[in-house]
Image (cartoon, rainbow, N blue to C red; front, side):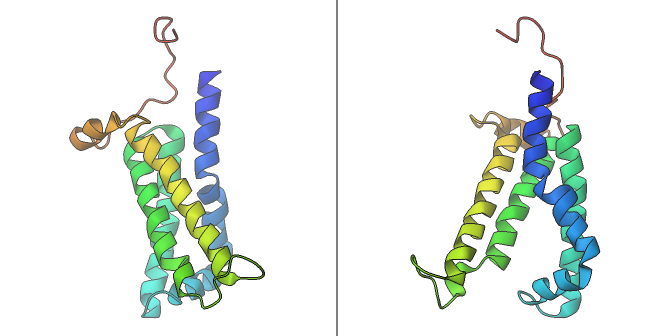
Length: 157
């Protein structure tokens, strides 16, 4: 049962990226490049960012799901969420940020906060709920958290 829960938690975290966001980049590549081009110039850089984002979403999500170098993958995905929030969820730049009524700024604010919250979930995977993973990440960045290892009878207590 613990293995199933560990997988379900990880699947909930990466489900946004794999398959949905990664697939959206494939199916709607021109639109994704247009969105990226709204934040960076030249357009060639926007293409590179979309391809890089696709690679991160796919490879790091697989690493988190399989438990292979999952701490580092979670750290990368956490950073990715923060960077994408800062680049594409710039609520502070909208002229219509209001608490009541229609407001694109408020909608971007909530998207920004959702990105930060997802980043927090990934950072919990990377470093542990108590920060005990910090020294491990510093000394063994490719180490696995072994999320699907069967627990011994003594470890369950």
